[in-house]
Image 1 (cartoon, one colour):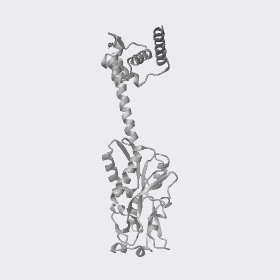
Image 2 (tube, rainbow, N blue to C red):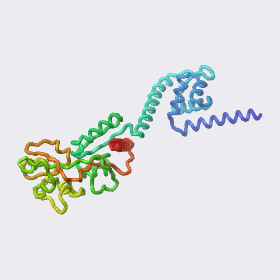
Image 3 (tube, rainbow, N blue to C red):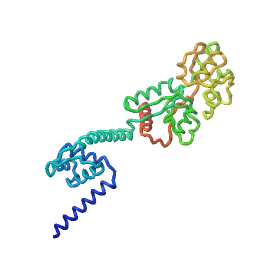
Image 4 (cartoon, one colour):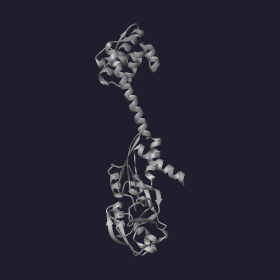
Length: 325
């Protein structure tokens, strides 16, 4: 009597369990995996062993799947052996495609979490591009992480800060500011000596050695005030002797404008070493001696950056800098 009652209880439990699966729970990937295993083995016992679950549980899951679909997927040949119905054959094709896509999505998710794939929007100022620093690090990073897309944009420093703040930029290579805007931070990646851009007609251009004292009374061409704010008055102020204020006679909207104005003979300007690679007729470059300060290039990023690919690039640059020390 107890055995009969137990069997009756098991039957009722299984019915309730299947009803719960079929009416209250949506189709899941495990249903497709179970179905594919039975379809490949053509046998519930072997499929259950392969899946490391009990055969009755597998049978219940397949029944629940059939109830969800409103169609029979298998016909039984023996107690455990089965064959696919026509609906089952068609459903198997779609199940395989879904499982493959799910596996691919999982792989991409894991790689994205590691930083192996993703997109990095990167800004850089002109001197960072001319120095080769940006191209060198981008090329080396791409060799290690070919599936990370790096989008480069040349932007002046303040535009980079603005873009970093509104999340349209991930990393910036900029001039070192007196202080970083809220939410941003950075570190020095390159120190560049100062050079003079001198009109070829200026007698100073003929000197082999030029110090700040030699040019203290010379007229200067500077970048716009907007570009200088927050950077200690710009590069010209950085090389001025103590107590001396440079005589700025003209300003250019960008570095190209400044160089063009210098070439016309209006005045000279001060800039970082990489800019000396820009050749303009009527303009010569000379290294400025007796100046301990340098033009410091920094990598700027959000203080609490969450994107794995961006963090990986930042760590990559730090690692390369440590190796150079």
